[in-house]
Length: 459
Image (cartoon, rainbow, N blue to C red; front, side, top):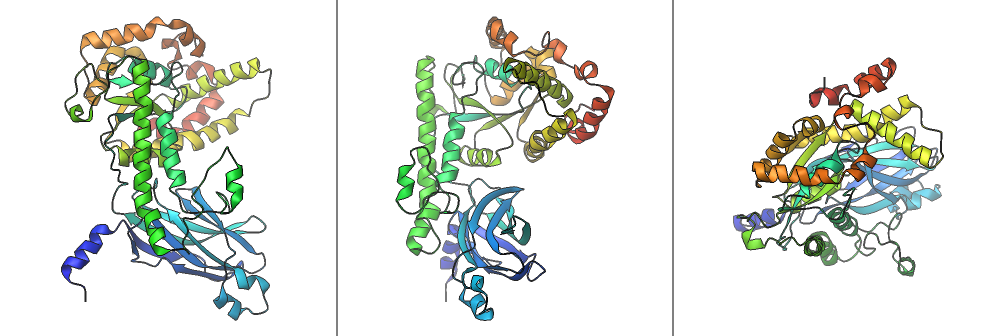
């Protein structure tokens, strides 16, 4: 029998715990068999993944694949083509019964620490049926042995919300580095964070890197490691699932530092050393700032795990004004390209709410206690106070001298600002929806955006 010390040691090494496994579809009009062999409730692993296996046999239409869904996003799709002797024995006359099994590992890096996966069968006619729900808990953040010199400054936002103006202000502070020039959309850190997510994932030969030589022929693509599978050497699978992600995390953090160090050298800003990060001098950089969209939650999740000292600014604008600005910008761009046909406004507004506002609102509800909210309207009408409060939240010099200097310097280059504007002035852009939207569209926006407008104080 294991003693208490051994049990305690085992628990300390546990990374993932499976809380519940629920079959949603066993036998029905669409499925002859639906079997989930692994995982089972109570499964614990010392890797950043969960291993799945089972069998799916369609009734009228063959099952060709199985999808794993988290928060409405398909994160993995695999074929249903493994040998299934038990099913074949029960259905000796059905050829498909011989190979209706599946086996894969699903990587959890980038997913919430406690969440669930919905498994859904994909049929040959492209119809889909949810078959199981697996709830899990990850007991630790992704670890890295590298000690980064800089910390991320996350600007979570929507386009046409004043992001370019705010980034222009941030880059003028001596403790904040913004790579590149106008419109400040260098996403270097996000590239490496996404790279970490992709190449740390278990093998998926259906949609990612194949096992044989063809992967070496494509110089424009690299995917999951083709030999990180569930049916190989257990020691190798353990290394892939535990050690490998940590090594990748260190590489990516080191690369991010390297990129911004070079950018800082070009910009003649002095870098902060690791020893001084908790006691920064005003002439040294603490943060690198990038724009982030809530549509890519895996990037934000990984970033906060690897950088627990990261700070996040939440920039919002009256969504009715955002619609007006986006519409004016799109018309301007369409005219430049001599394209006259735009989507119907009602369809466009509903799509915008679903694809952009909903993820933003969801992230706000998750993070509101830890982030600093900036309203576009306050940034325009009360810039000194708004910028001072923001810098105070970041723990940076927010003296009136530096705030005034930042605003004056950022305002000096008006040519690009004028190109970016879709109204006569920043002040005129506030409340423009009351004049630019028809009563019908105003009512539609008030209805469709109601939750977000209320949440951020616009209703």
